[in-house]
Image (cartoon, rainbow, N blue to C red; front, side, top):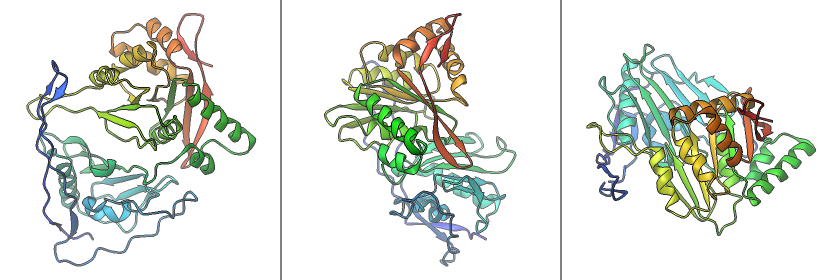
Length: 376
Protein backbone atom coordinates (compact mmCIF):
# COMPACT_ATOMS: atom_id res chain seq x y z
CA UNK A 1 0.00 0.00 0.00
CA UNK A 2 1.32 3.43 -0.90
CA UNK A 3 1.44 5.59 2.21
CA UNK A 4 0.25 9.22 2.28
CA UNK A 5 3.02 11.33 0.85
CA UNK A 6 4.43 14.73 1.62
CA UNK A 7 6.34 17.11 -0.65
CA UNK A 8 10.08 17.47 -0.03
CA UNK A 9 10.87 20.30 -0.62
CA UNK A 10 7.85 22.51 -1.14
CA UNK A 11 7.15 23.51 -4.72
CA UNK A 12 6.24 26.71 -6.51
CA UNK A 13 3.73 27.06 -9.30
CA UNK A 14 4.15 29.37 -12.26
CA UNK A 15 1.83 32.39 -12.16
CA UNK A 16 -1.29 32.33 -14.30
CA UNK A 17 -0.51 33.48 -17.86
CA UNK A 18 -1.51 36.96 -18.88
CA UNK A 19 -3.65 37.66 -21.88
CA UNK A 20 -2.29 37.32 -25.40
CA UNK A 21 -2.08 40.69 -27.12
CA UNK A 22 -3.54 39.82 -30.54
CA UNK A 23 -2.98 43.30 -31.95
CA UNK A 24 0.75 43.37 -31.28
CA UNK A 25 1.12 39.58 -31.46
CA UNK A 26 3.09 39.32 -28.28
CA UNK A 27 2.39 37.76 -24.91
CA UNK A 28 2.01 40.10 -21.98
CA UNK A 29 2.84 37.28 -19.56
CA UNK A 30 5.71 37.82 -17.11
CA UNK A 31 8.69 35.53 -17.14
CA UNK A 32 7.34 32.38 -15.44
CA UNK A 33 8.68 31.20 -12.12
CA UNK A 34 10.54 27.94 -12.73
CA UNK A 35 8.70 24.92 -11.45
CA UNK A 36 10.79 23.11 -8.86
CA UNK A 37 10.34 19.33 -9.07
CA UNK A 38 9.36 17.75 -5.78
CA UNK A 39 10.11 14.34 -4.42
CA UNK A 40 7.16 12.60 -2.82
CA UNK A 41 7.90 10.26 0.05
CA UNK A 42 5.68 8.45 2.52
CA UNK A 43 4.71 10.59 5.50
CA UNK A 44 6.53 8.22 7.86
CA UNK A 45 9.75 8.61 5.85
CA UNK A 46 10.07 4.93 4.94
CA UNK A 47 11.11 3.92 1.46
CA UNK A 48 8.53 2.85 -1.07
CA UNK A 49 8.56 -0.77 -2.27
CA UNK A 50 11.22 -1.75 -4.77
CA UNK A 51 10.50 -1.20 -8.45
CA UNK A 52 9.23 -4.25 -10.25
CA UNK A 53 11.35 -5.42 -13.18
CA UNK A 54 9.79 -4.42 -16.48
CA UNK A 55 9.95 -6.71 -19.52
CA UNK A 56 12.72 -6.15 -22.07
CA UNK A 57 11.92 -3.95 -25.03
CA UNK A 58 14.10 -2.58 -27.79
CA UNK A 59 17.83 -3.16 -27.95
CA UNK A 60 18.86 0.29 -26.68
CA UNK A 61 16.55 0.17 -23.66
CA UNK A 62 19.44 -0.21 -21.21
CA UNK A 63 20.62 3.35 -21.82
CA UNK A 64 20.45 6.20 -19.37
CA UNK A 65 17.42 6.38 -17.10
CA UNK A 66 14.96 9.19 -17.79
CA UNK A 67 15.79 12.29 -15.70
CA UNK A 68 13.48 14.82 -14.04
CA UNK A 69 10.79 12.40 -12.87
CA UNK A 70 10.98 13.12 -9.12
CA UNK A 71 7.93 15.38 -9.35
CA UNK A 72 5.80 12.40 -10.35
CA UNK A 73 5.96 11.17 -6.78
CA UNK A 74 5.34 7.43 -6.38
CA UNK A 75 5.04 7.13 -10.17
CA UNK A 76 8.59 8.45 -10.62
CA UNK A 77 10.22 5.08 -10.07
CA UNK A 78 8.25 3.62 -12.97
CA UNK A 79 8.70 6.68 -15.19
CA UNK A 80 12.49 6.59 -14.71
CA UNK A 81 12.70 3.50 -16.92
CA UNK A 82 13.53 4.79 -20.43
CA UNK A 83 11.37 2.09 -22.01
CA UNK A 84 8.17 3.39 -20.44
CA UNK A 85 6.06 5.60 -22.70
CA UNK A 86 2.72 5.69 -20.88
CA UNK A 87 1.40 5.36 -17.33
CA UNK A 88 -2.30 5.02 -16.52
CA UNK A 89 -3.73 5.22 -13.00
CA UNK A 90 -7.33 3.99 -12.87
CA UNK A 91 -8.49 5.19 -9.47
CA UNK A 92 -7.90 2.47 -6.91
CA UNK A 93 -8.16 -0.22 -9.60
CA UNK A 94 -4.47 -0.26 -10.48
CA UNK A 95 -1.62 1.09 -12.56
CA UNK A 96 -1.05 0.13 -16.19
CA UNK A 97 2.32 0.63 -17.86
CA UNK A 98 3.40 0.58 -21.50
CA UNK A 99 7.10 -0.20 -21.71
CA UNK A 100 7.16 -0.88 -25.45
CA UNK A 101 5.38 -4.23 -25.46
CA UNK A 102 1.79 -3.13 -24.88
CA UNK A 103 -0.07 -2.23 -21.70
CA UNK A 104 0.53 -4.41 -18.66
CA UNK A 105 -0.86 -4.15 -15.13
CA UNK A 106 1.77 -3.34 -12.48
CA UNK A 107 1.29 -5.74 -9.53
CA UNK A 108 3.41 -3.72 -7.09
CA UNK A 109 1.14 -0.65 -7.30
CA UNK A 110 -1.59 -0.14 -4.73
CA UNK A 111 -3.35 3.07 -3.76
CA UNK A 112 -6.67 4.28 -2.47
CA UNK A 113 -8.99 6.60 -4.35
CA UNK A 114 -8.06 9.41 -1.95
CA UNK A 115 -4.36 8.90 -2.70
CA UNK A 116 -4.98 8.82 -6.45
CA UNK A 117 -6.88 12.09 -6.20
CA UNK A 118 -4.14 13.68 -4.08
CA UNK A 119 -1.54 12.64 -6.65
CA UNK A 120 -3.63 14.00 -9.54
CA UNK A 121 -4.15 17.37 -7.86
CA UNK A 122 -0.42 17.58 -7.12
CA UNK A 123 0.66 16.80 -10.70
CA UNK A 124 -1.78 19.28 -12.23
CA UNK A 125 -0.55 21.95 -9.80
CA UNK A 126 3.01 21.31 -10.98
CA UNK A 127 1.80 22.29 -14.44
CA UNK A 128 0.39 25.55 -13.11
CA UNK A 129 -3.30 24.63 -13.24
CA UNK A 130 -6.04 23.70 -10.80
CA UNK A 131 -7.98 20.43 -10.59
CA UNK A 132 -11.25 20.19 -8.67
CA UNK A 133 -14.95 19.43 -9.18
CA UNK A 134 -15.41 22.71 -11.05
CA UNK A 135 -12.56 21.81 -13.45
CA UNK A 136 -12.50 18.00 -13.35
CA UNK A 137 -10.68 17.45 -16.66
CA UNK A 138 -7.28 19.11 -17.02
CA UNK A 139 -4.26 18.55 -19.26
CA UNK A 140 -0.81 19.98 -18.49
CA UNK A 141 2.79 19.65 -19.61
CA UNK A 142 5.44 19.29 -16.92
CA UNK A 143 9.19 19.81 -17.11
CA UNK A 144 11.03 17.72 -19.70
CA UNK A 145 7.90 17.37 -21.84
CA UNK A 146 5.96 14.99 -19.59
CA UNK A 147 2.25 15.27 -20.40
CA UNK A 148 -0.36 14.67 -17.70
CA UNK A 149 -4.12 14.37 -18.20
CA UNK A 150 -6.33 14.02 -15.13
CA UNK A 151 -10.05 13.39 -14.69
CA UNK A 152 -11.93 13.54 -11.39
CA UNK A 153 -15.39 12.25 -10.49
CA UNK A 154 -18.14 12.97 -11.40
CA UNK A 155 -16.71 13.32 -14.92
CA UNK A 156 -15.14 9.90 -14.33
CA UNK A 157 -17.32 7.08 -13.03
CA UNK A 158 -14.17 4.99 -12.41
CA UNK A 159 -12.58 7.19 -9.79
CA UNK A 160 -9.64 9.52 -10.35
CA UNK A 161 -7.96 8.85 -13.69
CA UNK A 162 -4.41 9.80 -14.66
CA UNK A 163 -2.94 9.41 -18.14
CA UNK A 164 0.75 10.26 -18.36
CA UNK A 165 2.67 10.38 -21.63
CA UNK A 166 6.45 10.29 -21.27
CA UNK A 167 8.73 11.58 -24.04
CA UNK A 168 11.64 9.51 -25.23
CA UNK A 169 14.71 10.04 -23.08
CA UNK A 170 16.70 10.09 -26.32
CA UNK A 171 16.31 12.01 -29.55
CA UNK A 172 16.00 9.10 -31.95
CA UNK A 173 17.38 9.39 -35.46
CA UNK A 174 15.98 7.81 -38.60
CA UNK A 175 18.81 5.28 -38.44
CA UNK A 176 17.77 4.43 -34.86
CA UNK A 177 14.21 3.76 -35.99
CA UNK A 178 15.50 1.66 -38.87
CA UNK A 179 17.57 -0.40 -36.42
CA UNK A 180 14.53 -0.78 -34.15
CA UNK A 181 12.49 -2.22 -37.00
CA UNK A 182 10.01 0.64 -37.35
CA UNK A 183 10.52 0.54 -41.11
CA UNK A 184 10.25 -3.24 -41.30
CA UNK A 185 13.00 -5.71 -42.09
CA UNK A 186 15.18 -6.77 -44.98
CA UNK A 187 15.70 -5.04 -48.33
CA UNK A 188 12.25 -3.42 -48.23
CA UNK A 189 13.16 -1.58 -45.04
CA UNK A 190 16.43 -0.34 -46.55
CA UNK A 191 14.59 0.91 -49.62
CA UNK A 192 12.03 2.68 -47.43
CA UNK A 193 14.80 4.34 -45.41
CA UNK A 194 16.34 5.71 -48.61
CA UNK A 195 12.94 6.92 -49.80
CA UNK A 196 12.34 8.83 -46.57
CA UNK A 197 15.78 10.39 -46.62
CA UNK A 198 15.24 11.45 -50.23
CA UNK A 199 11.86 12.98 -49.32
CA UNK A 200 13.56 15.18 -46.71
CA UNK A 201 16.31 16.22 -49.12
CA UNK A 202 13.75 17.05 -51.82
CA UNK A 203 11.74 19.07 -49.27
CA UNK A 204 8.60 17.01 -49.83
CA UNK A 205 5.70 18.04 -47.61
CA UNK A 206 4.83 15.08 -45.37
CA UNK A 207 1.72 13.94 -43.49
CA UNK A 208 2.24 11.20 -40.90
CA UNK A 209 -0.90 9.33 -39.88
CA UNK A 210 -1.84 6.61 -37.43
CA UNK A 211 -3.70 5.85 -34.24
CA UNK A 212 -2.69 7.18 -30.83
CA UNK A 213 0.59 5.70 -29.65
CA UNK A 214 1.58 4.42 -33.09
CA UNK A 215 4.80 6.46 -33.22
CA UNK A 216 3.77 9.48 -35.31
CA UNK A 217 5.62 12.03 -33.20
CA UNK A 218 8.71 9.83 -32.95
CA UNK A 219 8.92 9.37 -36.72
CA UNK A 220 8.27 13.05 -37.40
CA UNK A 221 11.07 14.12 -35.05
CA UNK A 222 13.48 11.66 -36.66
CA UNK A 223 12.65 12.92 -40.15
CA UNK A 224 13.15 16.54 -39.12
CA UNK A 225 16.52 15.57 -37.70
CA UNK A 226 17.58 14.71 -41.27
CA UNK A 227 17.10 18.32 -42.42
CA UNK A 228 20.27 20.28 -43.32
CA UNK A 229 21.72 22.11 -40.29
CA UNK A 230 21.41 25.54 -41.93
CA UNK A 231 17.61 25.31 -42.10
CA UNK A 232 15.26 26.91 -39.57
CA UNK A 233 12.54 24.57 -38.27
CA UNK A 234 9.47 26.11 -36.62
CA UNK A 235 7.31 23.71 -34.61
CA UNK A 236 3.68 24.40 -33.71
CA UNK A 237 2.06 22.11 -31.15
CA UNK A 238 -0.96 21.95 -28.93
CA UNK A 239 1.28 20.43 -26.26
CA UNK A 240 5.04 20.44 -26.86
CA UNK A 241 6.14 16.85 -27.49
CA UNK A 242 8.49 16.94 -30.46
CA UNK A 243 12.18 16.48 -29.67
CA UNK A 244 14.23 17.15 -32.75
CA UNK A 245 17.98 16.56 -32.98
CA UNK A 246 18.70 19.67 -35.06
CA UNK A 247 20.70 22.84 -34.28
CA UNK A 248 18.01 25.36 -35.28
CA UNK A 249 14.58 24.50 -33.91
CA UNK A 250 12.10 26.95 -32.38
CA UNK A 251 8.78 25.89 -30.91
CA UNK A 252 5.39 27.53 -30.44
CA UNK A 253 2.81 26.05 -28.08
CA UNK A 254 -0.93 26.67 -27.86
CA UNK A 255 -2.41 27.84 -24.59
CA UNK A 256 -5.77 27.24 -22.99
CA UNK A 257 -7.79 30.08 -21.57
CA UNK A 258 -7.32 30.94 -17.90
CA UNK A 259 -10.06 30.72 -15.27
CA UNK A 260 -11.48 34.05 -16.49
CA UNK A 261 -11.71 32.72 -20.05
CA UNK A 262 -8.89 34.95 -21.34
CA UNK A 263 -5.42 34.30 -22.68
CA UNK A 264 -6.21 31.51 -25.12
CA UNK A 265 -3.76 31.05 -28.00
CA UNK A 266 -5.01 28.76 -30.77
CA UNK A 267 -3.09 26.63 -33.22
CA UNK A 268 -4.59 28.65 -36.06
CA UNK A 269 -3.10 31.83 -34.61
CA UNK A 270 0.27 30.16 -34.10
CA UNK A 271 0.44 28.96 -37.71
CA UNK A 272 -0.05 32.56 -38.82
CA UNK A 273 2.62 33.75 -36.39
CA UNK A 274 5.03 31.06 -37.57
CA UNK A 275 4.78 32.32 -41.14
CA UNK A 276 6.25 35.63 -39.94
CA UNK A 277 9.29 33.83 -38.52
CA UNK A 278 10.79 32.85 -41.89
CA UNK A 279 10.58 29.10 -41.42
CA UNK A 280 12.49 26.84 -43.77
CA UNK A 281 10.31 24.01 -42.52
CA UNK A 282 6.89 24.65 -40.98
CA UNK A 283 5.69 21.78 -38.80
CA UNK A 284 2.27 21.31 -37.18
CA UNK A 285 2.62 18.65 -34.51
CA UNK A 286 -0.95 17.43 -34.92
CA UNK A 287 -3.84 18.50 -37.16
CA UNK A 288 -6.95 18.23 -35.03
CA UNK A 289 -9.20 21.14 -35.99
CA UNK A 290 -9.69 24.25 -38.07
CA UNK A 291 -5.92 24.91 -38.13
CA UNK A 292 -5.77 22.51 -41.09
CA UNK A 293 -6.88 25.45 -43.27
CA UNK A 294 -3.88 27.58 -42.25
CA UNK A 295 -1.50 24.64 -42.70
CA UNK A 296 -2.74 23.80 -46.20
CA UNK A 297 -2.63 27.46 -47.16
CA UNK A 298 0.95 27.78 -45.93
CA UNK A 299 2.14 24.63 -47.69
CA UNK A 300 0.50 25.82 -50.89
CA UNK A 301 2.32 29.16 -50.85
CA UNK A 302 5.94 28.13 -51.19
CA UNK A 303 6.67 26.66 -47.76
CA UNK A 304 8.13 23.34 -48.87
CA UNK A 305 9.61 20.80 -46.48
CA UNK A 306 6.72 21.11 -44.05
CA UNK A 307 5.07 18.31 -42.13
CA UNK A 308 2.29 17.38 -39.76
CA UNK A 309 0.57 14.44 -38.12
CA UNK A 310 -3.03 13.28 -38.17
CA UNK A 311 -4.99 10.70 -36.20
CA UNK A 312 -6.42 8.09 -38.59
CA UNK A 313 -7.10 4.38 -38.22
CA UNK A 314 -6.01 3.49 -41.75
CA UNK A 315 -4.65 5.07 -44.89
CA UNK A 316 -8.10 4.79 -46.46
CA UNK A 317 -9.56 6.95 -43.66
CA UNK A 318 -7.14 9.85 -44.09
CA UNK A 319 -9.13 11.65 -46.78
CA UNK A 320 -12.34 11.58 -44.75
CA UNK A 321 -10.49 12.80 -41.63
CA UNK A 322 -9.08 15.80 -43.50
CA UNK A 323 -12.49 16.62 -44.95
CA UNK A 324 -13.99 16.53 -41.45
CA UNK A 325 -11.31 18.89 -40.13
CA UNK A 326 -11.75 21.16 -43.12
CA UNK A 327 -15.47 21.37 -42.36
CA UNK A 328 -14.58 22.86 -38.96
CA UNK A 329 -12.84 25.65 -40.90
CA UNK A 330 -15.86 26.03 -43.24
CA UNK A 331 -14.01 24.47 -46.16
CA UNK A 332 -15.93 22.38 -48.67
CA UNK A 333 -14.76 18.78 -49.32
CA UNK A 334 -13.72 19.83 -52.81
CA UNK A 335 -11.61 22.70 -51.49
CA UNK A 336 -9.93 20.43 -48.95
CA UNK A 337 -9.23 17.84 -51.62
CA UNK A 338 -7.69 20.22 -54.14
CA UNK A 339 -5.56 22.03 -51.57
CA UNK A 340 -4.36 18.76 -50.03
CA UNK A 341 -3.37 17.22 -53.36
CA UNK A 342 -1.36 20.33 -54.13
CA UNK A 343 0.19 20.69 -50.67
CA UNK A 344 1.06 17.19 -49.41
CA UNK A 345 3.55 15.12 -51.35
CA UNK A 346 3.75 11.94 -49.27
CA UNK A 347 1.59 10.21 -46.66
CA UNK A 348 3.18 7.84 -44.13
CA UNK A 349 0.89 5.58 -42.11
CA UNK A 350 1.95 3.88 -38.88
CA UNK A 351 0.26 1.07 -36.99
CA UNK A 352 0.80 -0.55 -33.64
CA UNK A 353 0.13 -4.25 -33.35
CA UNK A 354 1.01 -6.31 -30.30
CA UNK A 355 3.04 -3.43 -28.90
CA UNK A 356 5.16 -3.18 -32.06
CA UNK A 357 5.13 0.09 -34.02
CA UNK A 358 5.60 -0.14 -37.77
CA UNK A 359 5.43 2.14 -40.79
CA UNK A 360 3.01 -0.05 -42.73
CA UNK A 361 1.87 2.05 -45.69
CA UNK A 362 2.87 5.01 -47.80
CA UNK A 363 0.80 6.83 -50.37
CA UNK A 364 0.04 10.01 -52.26
CA UNK A 365 -3.13 12.07 -52.40
CA UNK A 366 -5.22 11.97 -55.55
CA UNK A 367 -8.66 13.17 -56.63
CA UNK A 368 -11.22 10.48 -57.41
CA UNK A 369 -13.89 10.66 -60.10
CA UNK A 370 -16.05 12.84 -57.82
CA UNK A 371 -13.20 15.25 -57.05
CA UNK A 372 -12.99 13.83 -53.53
CA UNK A 373 -9.76 13.10 -51.67
CA UNK A 374 -8.25 9.63 -51.77
CA UNK A 375 -4.84 8.09 -51.07
CA UNK A 376 -3.18 5.73 -53.53
